[in-house]
Image (cartoon, rainbow, N blue to C red):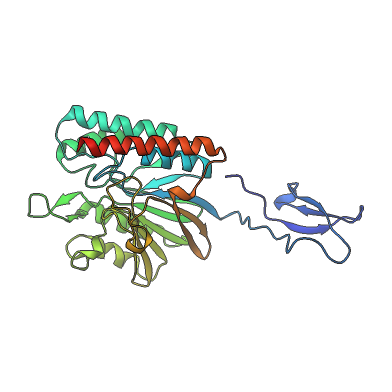
Length: 317
């Protein structure tokens, strides 16, 4: 997304023209004639702070996948033009050790990402890294299952909540793992002066016995006294919490199984649109049906294709 420079108002002596100069003597894109007393605008202080940026978050595509929804989301994202997109996991159906099936599923998903016009950051969910075969394929394609980056003085933490299993064969919660916890504690310690920290994970670990035994409390302790926001998915319904004085957000779906009963039940297909500011993230939940392409016929065609694909899907079940 293109940014306007921070503007400083200077008054031109020529024909009552107002010239807005950019930083470091760079010419501003805005030139406007102003009246002597009143003008038909509220302000010329543009909302264009250089440190602000916009990105999008997509949530569960699978776990009862509904066909064509994620493809629709990609098209909407291309219309919206965020700086980048990050996921909270469950990108393929998975839950198999059949390499051929897994490679087909990843091939399909990565094909969608090739159509996306901005960078995409992968975060694993239980449908992506359930077993050793799936973990191996993830690492072959993407390398690490957890990582971090800093962008515009904002720390991004991408966690793998399905790294180490508990005693049960396939438990509802899996630990972050000691090495992962130590990795993020070190990253947090090395980035103490960032303006905000954003965490992205698949499972809402804090909802299972207050996170006991998952490794999350240790990361929360490392973040004590700092401003941060958490995003997750997994349950296919939208919910928020205030924990440790910070906001934790569980996103709904971007194609995953859902009764789609609407906002009252937190069941809807969405993109989370984040504008990062010095005050923290400004978060808008955009429903896919509420983002309409300028070409209405193309948008309606996509809706029809999705409805037909899902009807065939229902008949096959």
